[in-house]
Image: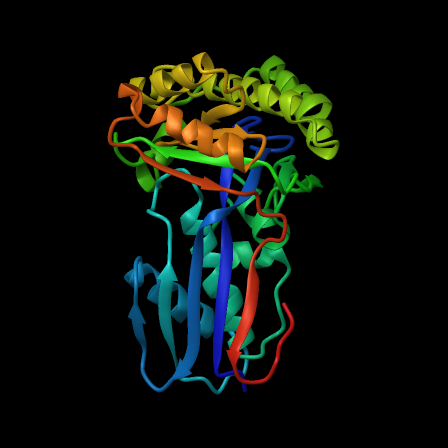
Length: 326
């Protein structure tokens, strides 16, 4: 039996939804991509009693209990959970989904239970109700284009996945204005929003399929960057009733505007924020951008980091015990 597993997941950027809930046809759908850092790192081992350490510990323990209960015919009595790394919750990087999937997949492997298909794994932790980017990205990494879910489905259908150029970089700027919406607040926000006009969904689809995805495939950075900004701004405009505009706060709007003034084209807000993303063509360009924004008033007290894309998705490693492949 496996003694100790380590599960490492990427984070996800979300560029915007295609639509909201519908009674007929697909609901939601959208575009996003996986990044290498920040990441979730969880270590799991069989134990006689339950224990947990690290950030988001209470949530992690609840997830591990639920996962163990769902494993058939296991002899494991309890699990020791050590959350080694986890991004701040509700920062727009999908950390809740990645933590949940990491623990669910890891506990099943710890119990030597058959792995679940990604839609069943996502459903088992009650995620993916609106966006499928984090679920497909957990499995595959890369740039994820998903068309949304239909009645009876638990996860939006993956329409296309594209590998992102490994030399590209993303500068993450987390603004100090509070957490993005989640839970009940997010649910109420969606209930108050008017439907996305069909013409907006058409324009978003056109941007994704005719500009963003082809540019990523041929590593055309300039076209990709400008199209990502246009997609995110248009998708964000659908949330104006609760955000006051395409961005979640005046501070985020000012930050995006300032970056555009600096000549940075591929910028936007990930999910509900407060994280702004800014694409750079390589490591040198990313370092230069970080130096340029450091003294600017718009980014005072912001947390700034740089990350490569992630094209692999999550990985499970055996730290001690029999070797198990990823």
